[in-house]
Image 1 (tube, rainbow, N blue to C red):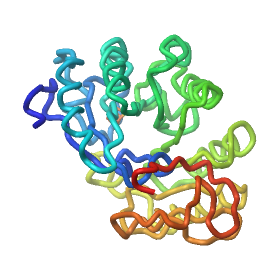
Image 2: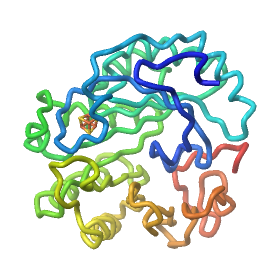
Image 3: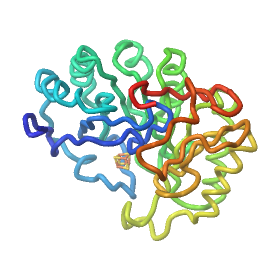
Image 4: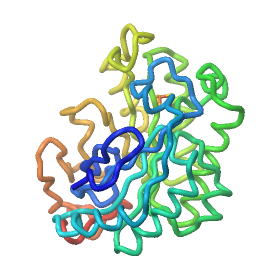
Length: 298
Ligand code: SF4
């Protein structure tokens, strides 16, 4: 079906929304992932080098996307399109144009960004994005500089998150953890404090443990007790939704109620059992989780 149109770097593919990862937005659903080449960063641990360094680009065709969506809309739990990369903001006009077709077909638009998407650009294309995953490389300007980032990307990412929440866009955050050092702990704590005091405690944070398979520059990644300690320390600040998203099978990928600690979504069991979440609230104690359900699935 997907060979009806081509992406510059390969075929678009279908993925579970948990693979993006988004855990609190229409869980159990699936998305068509469309990748945009190029990236402003030079991470030593990049595991997507051909995509990140590519200069090839031919725009996606909204009409062809419409045809594919027409077919996918018959699949149970299909949500829409997820723009990934690389960095989608590098070809934002094409993303906006194609996303219009996605909305016209009655589906949702998800965007992941490494921080290249500016808040003003998002405001200028207000109805384009339904859900956003903002990936942080760290939470210190020095970490960004070391990755060859253009100046101001960290500040830009923070403003983007705050603006998106104020516009009613669903937002989840991701943080790369490349080592188990005191400075990584410090950056994580600064990020959690920002979530707790300036955002909402219900905003999910995904930790991406950088491992040797992400590149030869990493000899060993952070050890598991270090990562588990980060999750526990966030809970002490009442930030209840910190996930070890690329540590598959780990208990800390489950959604626990931050109030009564019941396991609400067990991510080791597919299809997901969503019966303990009622209208985005904990089915046991009733507190609002800020979790959006797909009525068709939940
Ligand atoms: S931000 Fe992601 S895609 Fe870009 S260089 Fe770093 S790891 Fe690679």
